[in-house]
Length: 214
Image (tube, rainbow, N blue to C red; front, side, top):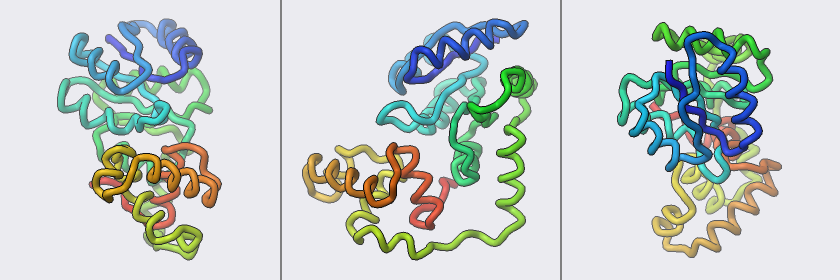
C-alpha cells in the first residue's frame, strides 16, 4: 500500500514515516509540507492512503480531503491531529476522510487505523469515537454569549475564515485591505485566546458561529 505523508514539520514526518516503515505491506512513497505539494504528489503517485495533519501552517489540511477524493477517488485519507473536537471530526468525515487519529495515540494505533482504511473501513481513535457518540445523543449546541467578546465585524470575518477562505479572499469579499483582515484576525485570536487558524475554526463551530460542512 503506497502512502503519502503531509505535515509541515519535517521531524513529525520522519517519526510517522519510521512507524509506517515498520508496518508490513505499507510503504511511504512521498512527503509534502503543504497543500500544493501534497496535491502534486497525489497526481503523480495516486497513493492508496494519504496521512495528513490538519494544521499546515496557515493552511487548513481539511481542504485536502475533498480535493484528494476528487483527484484520486481510490485514495483514502487518514487525518492525524492533536484536536479531538467532535465538530472537527464530523467535518473531516463529511468531507470524505476515512480515519481520524489523535497524535497522542499509542504507536500501534496507527497500524490499526491504516489496516482498517486499507480494508475500506473507517477508523476513529477511541476517545474521538466516544465524543462522536456523545454528539449524537445530546441536544445540538446553540450559540452562546461568548460570541459577545467579538464585534459583529469580527464575527463576520471569523465565519469567513471558518468557511476556509483565505485572507486575500476575505479582503476582496469585504472590500477591505489584507492588512486590515490580518489585524482583525490578530484581535480575534487575542480575545478568544486561540493561537492558530484550526483553533479559530473549532472555536467558531463550538460557539455556533458556523456549522460543520454538509
